[in-house]
Image (cartoon, rainbow, N blue to C red):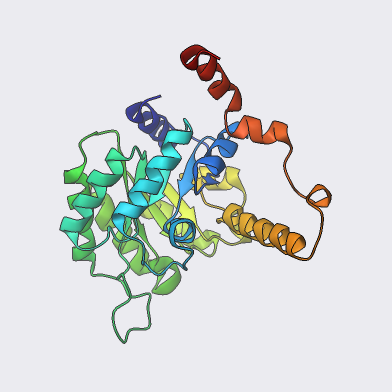
Length: 286
């Protein structure tokens, strides 16, 4: 499946009437596992990219080229649409244009551009937002930079959880008017905030960091939420599994006695071993 076809599938999700949980993926193997489990779309976040590439917390230390390269590796490994978190676009509006160009070339189906002031300025407490005018300039630049009209550009703000519901809605309305295809509210705490958001804009909504009130997907779908993130537990679980396995080996446990090691059949499926064996027979003569 080519990139445009995947983007059209993502747009179909946005046009539909269901709410989907994306698979949080971070490398080719996790991407293939997500596809094998039947997920309709994947999510590659800046935080998981930082962990995967740098082993560092989410402090905007990752470069655009590093993020785009890892997104490409993920995309090559599976056939479902990939939504990525492009943070603040790695700079000003001109940097946003470059970000869109690189991520479009990497095959992503959708990308978010947020209005958080990043990286953290000297002396600031963190969590500050750009002006709405600067945010509008960034999303307009993103829209101007895309070559494939099916690439989805998503506006994003953390304002709902940091400043006020009114500020978040003002930002969402401004970015919607600028032409974004969907809007991502981070930090929505309750149904009252979601109701206000859904009443203010008429484009599809993506949410992340919601409370227990926001787990009913039928309710979310009725308020135009088409994608609801559940967090990025897979990479955390993978880190714990690596730790536990190495610790057990370090302490003298025999490899045959390790717990949680996948079967050979599981690994063969995840790595597409049968495909490679077929190509070896066909092209290498054995």
